[in-house]
Image (tube, rainbow, N blue to C red):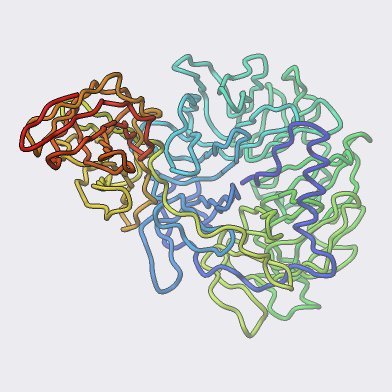
Length: 634
């Protein structure tokens, strides 16, 4: 549930990134409006166990490169007229919202968190057990270009309910992983944990000196302070290191409990609710504030450098004096669920509609006070002043509200997923399909790149030996077939030679007596074919080490040579009677027979051709002379 620019590897990087993203996310003189800029979305509830009672289909969204990755508890993607079975994890073009039908990883159950990594990988967490048929548990790192598992990443979590709720790379450079799990391992070396670990995002090495014990429920959110050496946790847990700390805690770098949940002001949550202590997300800012979202209807901002005193509280409700449709009763609103920093704003989502209140004192659950505004599932706040930005007011509707938020720095648009049924101004709403893309009132930014195509093979080589050529390629495993084509002469047509299934990475055939080169492409289950990759011979072709030309008759000659390395074929050139050089023929082997005219003097040389068509320097074979129907070498 974390956007790519939240990766904060240093204070300087954070400041630079905020300026860059802020410029994209808050255009001068414009404000993000309610027009949903994507027609694609999510449909059909999945089989997740840990969120079975929630109507939310979307739980996480992340922008990486030119793609919006969406995870959740859904079985299909749809634009209203077309649907496809792509459960739990899907990719959409970040500029257009178009579903990327070639991207089809097989994920066994729900995805709750997605995070882009500094090295180009993508972390994914949830309650799934397998990824593309491989037993992985609920945490993976994948290649976002292919959907394949990231090579060398072998960090796993398991046990208890085997759930990963949140992932974040913080200013200390570590990857924080939280959820409900009791074991963690790297390369099979297992340690005992309790829902919270931190690791190296590149190697996966777990910091075994920092293993706090969190019990009594899931950890849902994690954030590292930007002014103190402290890590904050939010969730449904009740104890930390054996001490009571219901739903919120601050952990020191030694792993000790530094601050407990008693710092949260009591807003009079109903005594009969076991969920009163649940806190769904937490965020820390460079201004020394901690933002905590959760039950009941509260978004609290605390001053971590002033004994966690309350800076401001935001609260959702339905005031019957203002709205006639309040149901089931007075002050009914909804819980805040997700907090996301995007540039110079903090966005918070909720399953809340109607009224929003803000106050510098605790807002009780029976009598909201403070500044009034209205809200529909998501609000924007100033991280410096903690006040609401009321000019941001999209109109959204749906039972479960928003659970995942991300911003796209290339066009300033905000993506949100969750349980969202409709979007747009009242009277002109359309189906939101649980995924919305909100852009500024001037419209989204320009399309910076074309829709990303399906991944092509990573590399292809063509190796010639004994008149046979072997084509080898590498790349992802999400394709269904590899298309192999051959070109007989440079600039000519390409001809189909085969289509082996996924799992095969080599193809061989006899080479015709001609200049030949090959290319390969991947075909995907939805019917798309990637761009082709030209096969090389592993490097520049090396010229033949020696060559001989022999006249075989008054009208024939035989040319033979010792092959150079990295050659897929050879071209023989000749000049007649001191004239210009012309091609006499080509061969896949080490010899060529060619015709000559009686009474002429011919000079031959040979070049080696690599798989991509590059020619070596020529090797001179010598000259022949024919006369009067007789032939001789010279």
